[in-house]
Amino acid sequence: MNTTLSAPAFLEKLRAATTESHTGLEALPVSTSIMNPAVTDKEYALYLGLMHDVVKDAEENIFPVVYKNVEGLDVHPKAQFIEADLKTLGVTKTQVSKPLTQNLDAVAITPAFAFGVMYVIEGSSLGGRVILKNINGALGHDAESGATYFSGYGAQTGSHWKAFLGALIQYADVNDSEEEIIAGANFAFDAISAHLTANAHL
Image (cartoon, rainbow, N blue to C red; front, side, top):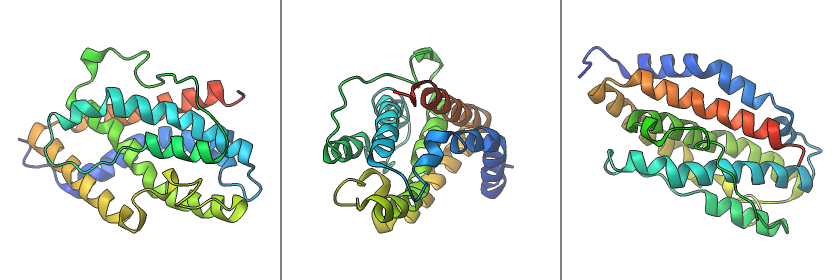
């Protein structure tokens, strides 16, 4: 165990090490489009469809690695919410790609690496609450219909995030795995960016 690892220090290290990848993802045109007051249903549906690929891939092929090694982790499946939102928008998702695992050796998905990927997916719930406000104001969709995914954990989003970070910190400390977690997080940000960049025109 790395007994010298402090929670604030590790989180600051994690945020700093992923800032460039995170900022790059948020700056993509398809990412900024959903924060535009003039966003259209078509642009919104495009973003949801692309994120569905990411979330479904993570939930089916990466998150189970974490669940097998961390007890009591309260992370709700979210791909189903995106599917419901797309249905509200009149869009049927017929083709699903695997933007995270298509070029990733399954053997390389360690629990710590997978936890880093989960950090990115779960962290998006915080930003989702901000996006929800814009989508609601621009398009009228809300947490009950059309914007369920971005509603996150509702009023409990903040507390869920704190609980998740607590589990992440504990795992990193007990397993001395902060570098692998950081690698997983950066991988996720970069893989999502590549997926959005390659398919945003579809």
